[in-house]
Length: 299
Ligand code: GH3
Ligand code: MG
Ligand code: MG
Ligand code: MG
Image (cartoon, rainbow, N blue to C red; front, side):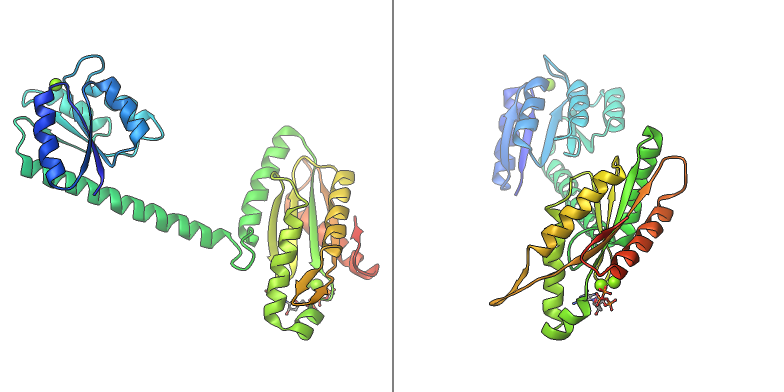
């Protein structure tokens, strides 16, 4: 059972409700004016708030406005407790985002049913939000490595490139492909190959900045978008990644397996062409790096 915050200026009202709610298994906290109520809601994060309209210091409508404006409480269901002649304020409260209202004199079983209904809806909202987060994760994350998949990489880099265009900043693309990865799979099996991919991902992640967009482009191919980065900085990032991957072998049981990358690097300049063109250039540079003998960067 959740915590319910009662905000009411009349101690007898509180006492009555408190007794019934605790009897139903809720934990109850109380406040005797709107100010105290808002502060307590922010501090204690109750599941639901019962809010009286007529109170000193800060009345119910003002308190509701503050609750709806605060990130910690804007989603907490509020049930207004009103007098029968409060029609205007009831309408105002519902329009401001109150979940429901009950009129005095309170009929506890009705209030209890409204509380259960509000809590049920809240639970459904949370379940939906969780499902939605999970869908977003599935749609944007590469399942093996947890980094951006190709689509998410495109979306995020597109956004960064639009920003770079507005701010007139150069940016770079790095295409990275593991050398002779087929051999690793052939020698040790696909599972070891998968773990080696995770290992390489982590090694690369240690070499990049939070503002860089990193993704898995395909099987054993990774891609990096470095916003606000010129070619000479991108080359040093590429060299740092290449060196780090080469010198951080994947430990398979007792055997350290050295993995190397070939990296193609290309520059994007504002007001020239789209980033896809730069990705193509980086891919062309990657093939040149392979031809040069692998385990190297090419621009
Ligand atoms: P190169 O140096 O020319 O890039 O040689 P390579 O062997 O790395 O390239 P190739 O394209 O011939 O082979 C890529 C291999 O990567 C083949 C494929 O089985 C493997 N691979 C792709 N995706 C995965 C994956 O998710 N897991 C594992 N274990 N292997 C993968
Ligand atoms: Mg009152
Ligand atoms: Mg390869
Ligand atoms: Mg490849």
